[in-house]
Length: 472
Image (cartoon, rainbow, N blue to C red; front, top):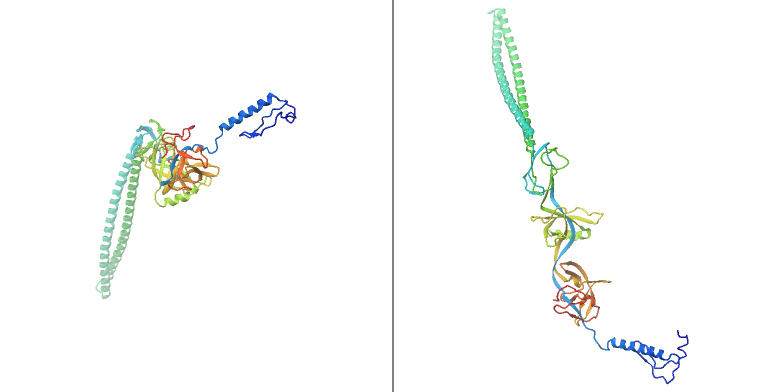
């Protein structure tokens, strides 16, 4: 260690020349310190060597830095769709749980699990013998009811005939009563003249009274006959009602018998078979025999944010909106459909609203329960400003691009971006068609840096493979 006043006591043995500085600002002096001897000389030589090396590495005044190689693209104006991207779930167009409507032994199963069926295809058969017997009994009961109708009609005809006969008897007896009254009056006159006896006159008077009594009885018989007709008519109506009830019983028996054959109510894909042949099935059991899911067409249900609802209503009023669905693991297959349903309200818990799109699905690309990426196409911007997506960078103040100036330098130019579709980004403001922007090589850039567009096959960043293609 040197004492604290070692350097302060150093003196020169000769007149000191003018001091100089190296490029790092170190003061160089040729004097030798008396008490340090060769050691201080060695330190001075070391300092000179370091300064010389530093001066050799520093660029000379007026020397230019090399231009940074980059890949550039021209800002274009083109038609770009206005899209809403989200995820959704595939749902069957309809789901039918097939159950038995009658109890019995399952005698036949006529499909394979997972099979596609058409409406009306036979699926199951149930033992039909008990219901066939019930149908035959209902038919027999109807025949008996029809016979009762015929009998009631005959009784009504007979009662009508009795009414006619009773009325004829009344007419005859009235005529006889009138004749008896005439004779009684004539004999009463003759009695006063003394031509006949009182006994004879009284006899004719009694006969007239008897005839009037017969007429009264006959009129009562007519009323009884008419009542008999009404009774016969009511009996006929009852018999006819029995026939109608018998007809209904026959129809019901036929319907019950038809339930022993279970056909597909609609076309679709069958699920798992829940009851095997030979088992006893119950009427309208809680567990279905099989489930049919209709997948041609098919639905995709998805949700969008409530802030997108005004745009949705605006463009939906202009016509049907197209929807695309794509499996996340199968980017090459896209299904095309249309929007068919918008829910009546926004879910307050999530701030979203549910929508449904319908797809023909003739090639069965979509399967119920599947998660898919959904693209709702609202409209198309005919003159959007577009740049390749890699041109847009994110900084502390937001999005920007490196804009190429006429002197082949760049500046960080702020932009407002829209949607990105197929590696193309819409610029809402900040650029104009024809501007040139950097799309590869931004890692080495800063505002004011000189650039040159790289040639064919040249990398913009030698230390990193960009993989972004050649400049236009």
